Length: 391
Image (tube, rainbow, N blue to C red):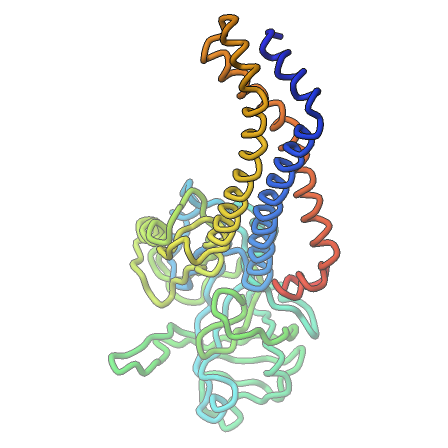
C-alpha cells in the first residue's frame, strides 16, 4: 500500500461524519437505481410470463405447410423448438347447422414435438384443449369435439357434409366429407375433393376463446375435431402439399422483419393469412417490431434513473467539494514536498473508490431487498395488475 493510499484511508477515518454521509448518499443512490431497474425487470418478466400463460410461447404459427417446409424448419439452426400437427381436412356443415355451429368442421391431429421441448421457456406452445368428458383419441379415426356439439344432431335433414348417427355423445359416430377448404374469387368458400370419413367421438373438450394460434382448438369459422397425435394427413399426397401446420420458436432473431425474412426463406411462403407472428410476446423477448423505445417500460426506467443520477451527483459532489476544501492545505503541503498532479489526482480517486466499494454493494443489497419486500407485501395487487394468476 502506497503512502498516498494510507493518507487517504487515514483522512477518511479521521473525518468519520463526512465519510458516513458520503457512504449513505452513495448507498441510497445505488439503492434507488437498483430498485427502479429491478422493478421494471420484474414487471417485464411478469408480463412475459402472463403473455405466455394466456397466449402460448410460440413465435410463428402457420396452418398451411408442406412436409418439405416442416423438414426445413426442423433443420434450421434458427429454430430452437418446433411443434407440428397434421391436417385431416375440412367438411361443410349443412345450412341449418351452420346457423349456430359455424360453417365448417376441421379435423387436425394432436400435436407432436418435432424439435426441442414441449414447453419452450417454461410454457406450452399454445393453450391446449381441456377435456370435460370422455378420453383422448388413440387412433386416427377417434376424435374429441368441442363441448357445444354435445347433444347436437348434425345433418338431421340429410344435407351438409357432416352427419351424426343421432345426438352426439361419447361413442357416437360422425361421418364427415373431408376435403380442402378453398376460397373463390368472390370470397365464397367451398370444399374441394371431399371424401367421406367416419369418426368415433371419444370425448369433449371445453370451448376455447376464438384466438387463432393462441388456442390450439381454434380455426376460422370452424369447429375443430382432434384425432390422435401422428395421424396421417387426410388431404394431399405429395411432400409439397400443404398437409401440416406448425408452431415455431426461434432464436438469434432480433426483429420482426428478420423473422418474416427467415420464415419465408425457410418455407418458401410469403406473408399470408395462414401465417401469424406473436407480436404481443416479441417486445418482452427483445425482438424489435419497429416501435420506438419511448413506448417501453425501459424508457420509464431510464427517465427515473436519470433523475436519480442527477440528484445523486449533486449530493455526492457537495461531499467531495467539502473534502477538497478541507484538504486543499494538505494537498498544498504534499505538493511542496514533491507530490505530482498525478499523485494528488490518484489520492482523490482512491478516496472515491474506497467510498464506492462500501456504498455501492450496500446500496445494491438494500435496493434489491427493498424491491423484494415491496413485491412480497403487494403480491396480490401486483398479480391482479399483470394478470398472472395465483402466487
